[in-house]
Length: 258
Image 1 (cartoon, rainbow, N blue to C red):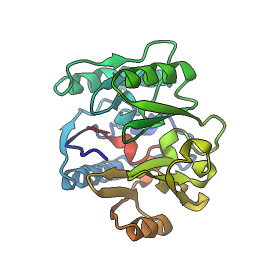
Image 2: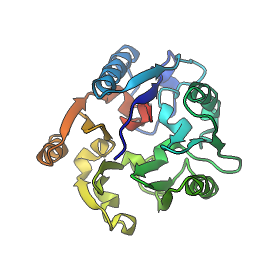
Image 3: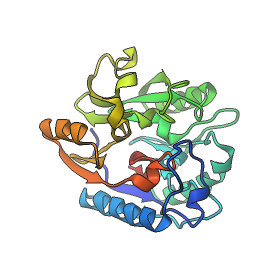
């Protein structure tokens, strides 16, 4: 499990409530979302992460979900091409911020599409979700870029899986060949070589957790998975994510970690 030192974040903008969502949980409260985002940033800093903060841009309501704009491995960086047309302009700000840290970039080209939320790094291996946002051509391009830097990858078909917008909506890597996975995908053959901590349907949202430098950021309000992670000896930082959940977002979505 690699150690992270930096992350790029972007606060919710004034038009946040106009973003894309299928959650059906009502409109987010911007003031509350800003407070939750700041608590998230402080949690990252408590894990030893130095933050680069992008300016909120009302032209892109979904831009707080900055993870979708790039895939960052230790040995390469790939600028994505988001599946939602309304989000493709977000990559410009992310690339500009990353130019301070990466000399060269790969980039997904049309007709390929990739959302970073469909890409789960598991050591030297990457799981790439094929979804409504990441198509097969984009996944093939990404796999090729990763392979050129010495990484292997596996495709995971997420199409038609209700309630899971992205692969990482239901999957997270904890290190030591251990995954957290929503029960609907926990038994997939793609994960057969890993130890899987299953998340029951009532706690599905908590499957999108993030391990950072020995601690796990977890959405609050999901006691069973929290207890299971603590039982594995992991330090858990529980964070209220209510306003981001309304917009189909989770903990991993809010930062690009490298």
